[in-house]
Image 1 (cartoon, helix red, strand yellow):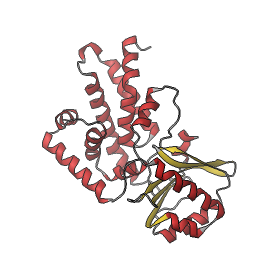
Image 2 (cartoon, one colour):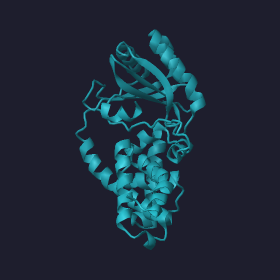
Image 3 (tube, helix red, strand yellow):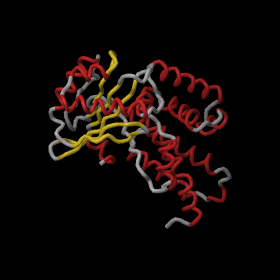
Image 4 (tube, helix red, strand yellow):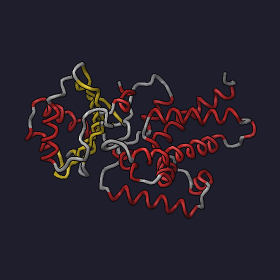
Length: 290
């Protein structure tokens, strides 16, 4: 049983650690495990000897995430088809500080996908600097690297993300209308309406993990995306519910006749059309949503 002091630390810092680990890993179950392991490490140490609790916990957690990412990269080389991170639902947490932090600092799904292109070290520096505002001196101490090296890692990470020319901010108001129109066009099997909703260079990525049918490679441009959507939508016989995923509208689909599915979107630079569609079908990666 945790001591009262340990319980206070757990309650105060769990939301922060969850937020960092989710940005680092993009998989909810692994995030929860690593957060728990971080607190177990703390429980084995003498809390009284730790003078900067936040820095201590962030350092332990970040290094655990780095170790996990290095091993996960090897596993993903054998993953069937495209690998997508797990979206996070925005729900009413009834005052739960974990849910409050997640909703206040929502990371868009599009940015989460882009961060998969970063090396583990680039991702760690990017998360600590951009999401949490740590100084390079603090990041260098956490990662046990030289400060100039951390600056270089952050610069490389920024360049990779900017090179994708995608919006990485959260835009729920603009997305809501497009997602509603998307659902309507799918239900009516209206190809012309879908074309109007997509940017010409639209890309659709689906992740079945080899456990359910999905496109093995990204689909593009817009006409091919529409053909694919109209082909698979005939199997979408369940409930199609618009909900908030990672701070902006997405779709959850479920029913007796279909596998649970989550769909997330990224808009173009003008917020006028849909640029990316991410369809997550792998049952292991959507179970936390239903």
